[in-house]
Image (cartoon, rainbow over all chains, first blue to last red; front, side, top):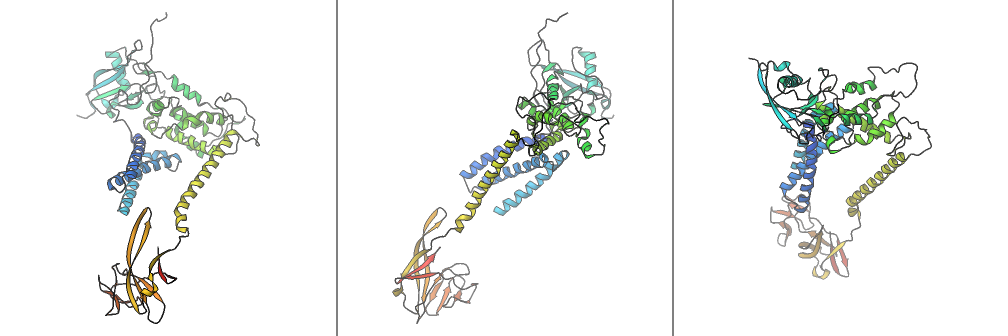
Length: 113
Length: 418
C-alpha cells in the first residue's frame, strides 16, 4: 500500500538554534576560538585609533590589551597545531598562557610608563 | 531525603511533523522520576512514548552506548540518550533536541545520510599495501598503535559533526567523524590507500578551527581534534617529501587505480610547493633586508659637517674670553627650529690658538659665565667653577667644559654644530 502523503524533511538545525542552553553549553575551547577572532577585530580598530590619535595612554592601553590577548590565544593555537603540546591539555594551556600574557602586559606597560 | 530520589522533572522535547512544512515546536512533559541516578534520557523518552504520546519518534537500539543510534542534543550538549543519566542534568527544564547539521526527518530523528556520505568520501576502509602470507604484526605497545590509540572506538553516532560549528559554516566540510576515521587509517603503516585518502581529506582538514567541541561531546571520549591535527601535520610533512603524488587534479581517477612511480618526474604539486616556498623565502628576505636597512643606513650615511659662523678672528683679542651667541637651524626628524645658544670663545695670550667651549655646564646644563675678576668660569646654579682651560676647579661638575671643533677660514671663525 503506497502512502500518498507528502514528506518534507526539516532543514538542519544549527548549534544553539532553538536552544535555551546555547550559552551555557558553550565550552571554553569554543570561547577561546571566538575571542581570538573578536580580539583580531579589536586590534584593527584600536590600531587605527592609535595611529591617528597618538600619545593618548588610554588608546595605547586598549591596543596593548587586545594585542596581548590575541597573541596569547594565538600562541595556544600554534602550540596545539604543531603538536608541541598535546591536545588534551588545551584547557590548561588557556590558563597558563593567560598568566604569561598578564605578565607580559605588566612588563611592557611599566617599561613604557 | 537524598537529592536524587523521587523528583518531578520537566522535559522540553522538540517535535516536528514531516507531513507539514513548519519549523517545529517544543512539547512539555512533566514526569515523576523515582530515582534520578538510575534513569537515563532514553528511559524518559520511552516512558513518554508509552504513557503520554505514542507519536514521539526517536532512534535507539542497543541501549548500552555501543550502536550510536540515540545521539541527540540534551540541554545544549550532544550526547547519547542511553548514556545520559538524569542525576547529572541540572536545570528546571531539560531540553531535548535532535542533532544539528542534519535534516530532521521527524521529532528527534535526523537523516544520517550526509554523515555517511562524508564518511565514505574519506575512504574509511582498509586495503592492504602489500600482499602478505602472514598477518602483519603491529605490536600493541608500538608507537604507531599508541598514536592511533582509542580513535578506532568510533561508533559513528554523529555527535561530533553536530557539535562542530564549522559543519554549519563550511557546507562541504567532511566533518570530525570522517576525519577521525581517516586518521586511524592514515596512521596505519599497513594501509595501501594512503595517497588516495590523503587527497580526499587534504582540503577538509584545514576547515578545522580547533574549537574542541567535538572532543567535548564524544560519547566514546575520542578526540577528533587530535586526529585532525595529525592529518594537518602529516600533510605539511608530505608536501616537502620528494615522492611523486597521485593525480592532484580535482577530477582525480577512482581511488583503486594503480599509478606508476617515476623518480624523474617533477609533479605539479611538488613544483608548486617548491615555488611557493621559494617565493615566500625571497619575499621574507626582501622585506627583512629592507627593514634592517631602514634601521641602519641613515646612521651610516656621511653627514656633511655643518659649520656655524661665530665671528671674525679680530673680534677676539689675545688673552680674552668672550661669550658669543650663535644661531643656526636645527633639524630633529621632521621638526626644524632656529636655535640660539651661547658659546665661550677663549683666545690664549701669546698664541693664535682659539678654544671655543660649550657654555653648558657639565653638571646639569646651566649656562656658565666667565668671571673676569676671579679668572674662572662660574656656573650660577650650583656654584661649579672651571679654570680658564676648562678643567673643573670646584663644585659638582664631573668633567671639564666641552669643546667645539673649530675651523678658521679667511679670518672667519666657525664651530661645528651637529
